[in-house]
Each structure stands twice: as structure tokens, then as C-alpha cells.
Image (tube, rainbow, N blue to C red; front, side, top):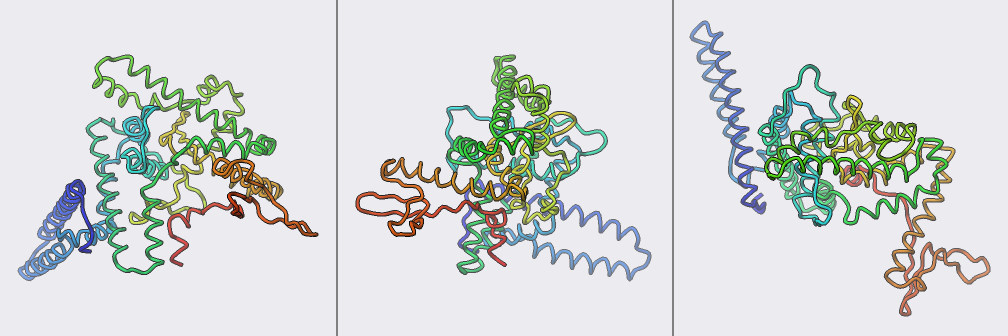
Length: 440
């Protein structure tokens, strides 16, 4: 544990988590002691109360040790007991999850077109936070009864509690890594650490090109089975984002003072992000039936859970690595309106989610699998051609023997060297990305 380093900002957050958890524990202890004291009827029960308080003091002193070498163990215990998530849930309770997510998305995930953010950028960390929070809230049913108005002050209370939770998870993960130098354990840590922190693609526009090339030749199947094509799905996404950006511009133009603009963007967050089927149809010029089919397949209501992952977001220590249904259905539906709360994720979802539809169609899956193999060979050859030159790259090269067997999927001849490439189209499953198949 002694090798675990803490940055200045992390020590501030760690102190806040520690103090707030300890204060909550002490308030609960006082309440329980008062309840027990109120029931005392004879002297012997006084000594029972004294013994109980002594035992509780020892337990609390052992649990809350603020030495940095032991803090990860403290956080692990607090996570296991639900203390840290309890604070986050208290901040979320009673408020519309749509309002919470709309305000956070408007505040943290909209950036200028000409801005570039690398993997260490805060924008990517914000993406991870909001992706997790969206998955958490949407996995729950929408609150019943009246909901409280979400003020900016209360939204700003939710955000640090979300940060606190993530720091506790990260420190718990780091502490677990230091327990052993076993190679398999190290690989599992690398997998979990990467999937916890890294979000998005370095060049997300390539996912659109790849999706169009992969699924475009299956338009007939898409239209017959899903009611829309991949190009129509991508077009709908672009239109929905353009509609939100246009509304943001309209809100900004209503006030000259930047502070007033920020206030207005937060106040009208739901109106900026939300759209109806009619809105999408008018803006995209797609037929209503196509819009309905597209949103039916790509949206989820509050309370939705994928049947293969029924227990997501229930275990605080594991929740950040749970399957997030946004990768299956990136649009959120509520009371006739649709929302995109994590825009950077949608391209990834559109590239990956339809693969499962095609694979589940037993009558068509082999056709798609063969086409997917050819697509991957073309993609690999095209990219290698940009490095070595198109005349140096060959697809499905054959041996110069009588049988003419295939030598490789893609072959590169360059400077008297031969590079042989065998293309495998199966991607990593969710369990593989989050180490859950490594430790079996």
C-alpha cells in the first residue's frame, strides 16, 4: 500500500469522502444510542449500553484510519457497505433523472467543433462519469409522485459525489493491484483500469464509415427486419445532434452576458436535448414509419435492463464495469420525448449494436458472417495500402501450387519483406474487456 501515490486534488477529495462517511456513521451511532437509552429500565441495561458503545468505538476507530497507506482499504469497506453510493443516491433522490442528465450533459459534454481532447483530457473523464450515471439512472424506474425542481446548486452537489464515488473505486482497484505481482492478476487490473478510464474513439468519424461499409450491403435485411437502414440511423443521429446544437445557439443568442447564457442553457437543458418523433421526421425528412422503427430499436425507457445482464448497477464495487445498455440503445425515451445524454457514445453503439441483431437471425447469420469477413479484409487492405502503397498490398493471395490454396487474407510485399495478415472479425466481448473471463 505504501507505493500508492495521491495527487493534491485526490487528497482533497479523499478527505471529503472520509469526513462525510465518518460524520454519517457518527450521526447513525448517536441516533441508535438515543433509541437504546430511551428503552433502559434498570441499571444492568446501562452497562450493556456502555459495553455496546465501547465495541462500536473500537469498530469505528479500526474502520476510519486516515493514513494514506490504509485509505484504499477504508474506501473498499465503505463501498462494500454502500456508504459512498448512499450519499450519491441521497443527492439523486426526489429529482427527475431527465433533468439531472440534461443539465450535466449540457454542462460537461458539449464542446466546440474545433476542439481536440486527448485521452488525459477532463472531457473524457466527464464522459465516463455521465455514461455511468446515465446507465445507473436509466436502469431504475422513473421516480413516482412529484419530483423536486433541480436547482444549479443541487446539480453542483451531485457532481462532486459522483467524483467521490469514482475516486473510491479507482483507489480500491489500485489497492487490489498491489496485493500480488501475479501476471494474470496484473492483466486483469490493466483490463479493468483501461475500461474504467478510457472512453470514445480517437477518430470517431471512422466508425461511421466502417458501419456504412459493414452494414450497407445488408440494407434489404435491415429494412425488412428493423424497418430502416444504417445510413438512415446515422442520418437520424446527425439530425438529432444538429437540432440540439441549433437550440443551444438560440438560447445563447437570447442573452449577451456569458453568465446569463450559461444559466439559460442549464435551465432549458431538457428542451435543448429532447425531441419527438415529429421533430425528428420534420428535421430529417425521413418517413414517420422509419423514424418510429428507428427509435423503437435504439431507445430505452427508464427501468430497462438487458435480459442477459439483469443485475447491473447493484454492486457498488463492480458497477462501473457493468454492461451499460446505452451501447445497445443509446437514445432514452420518456413521456413521448427522446434524449441523447452521452453523444460521444452513439457512434460506437451504432457500429456495434446491429451486429447482435444480425447474429441472432439464424437464417441470415452465415450470410452476414461471410460478408463481414470480406469487409474486414477490404478494410485492412485499404489501411495497409496507405502505409505501404496500394500496389504492395494483395487480398486473398493464392499459393503458386496446383491446388492454389489461399496463402493469407491480406499480404504485403515491401522492400523484399513479406507481411502475412489473417483477419479475425470477432470483437472482444464485454466480459473480456472488464477482466471477467480472465479470473475464471
